[in-house]
Length: 256
Image 1 (cartoon, rainbow, N blue to C red):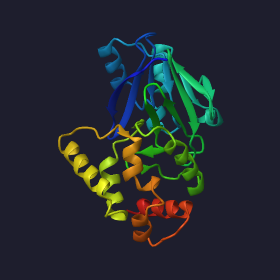
Image 2: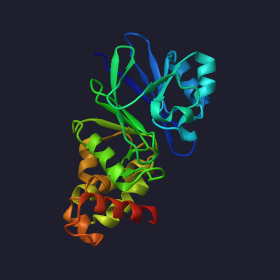
Image 3: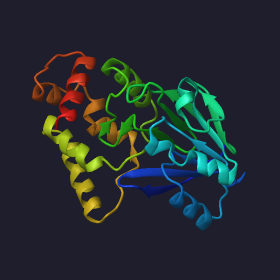
Image 4: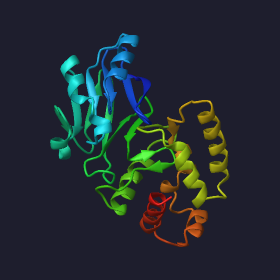
């Protein structure tokens, strides 16, 4: 199996597009291309040809470049089969447990609804890379636009079970704001305090805070930590079940 070279492309205000390249075959996938010009510029700079688009969900800031990139490159667009009518230009429909190949690199598809009903994530085991879209962020998770708290918690548990050294390539630079909220609900988490100091320094230096590792998320992301006694006490739900604690945490973040 092949390992991917992954290039992070900042676009718009706070989006990330990822280009994932298999050197052996020359195949290159763009993950959630919001816009076209920055993607084409990096492809030209690297001398890569676009073979695939991997969409995590239908929102325009993840699919806005689909049709033009397909027209220019002839690439194959992959997306959630259950949400195909909302994925512009979709060619390949995938769902839970399916495999997606980018040249010699194979990725596993997880259905992770909650943010949208048809959200998926792509895990490339050999590359140690998870493209989580808006399901899992650094120290955050997506708003529940089309799903319930129970559904989102079930989705996140799938991702939490991946190897701890998995790198989480989420789709937005939300880390600093997410971390400020995290500190408000888990103020005594020493790992979180230390991580936020590092995040603040990165942002002062105009550097990305993404990707993170799953180990970092498990230690500091409040949406993955409903069993934290510190979190439960802060939000007034000591001994609460995970879904109830998660739901309250999400509600608090929505109004933070």
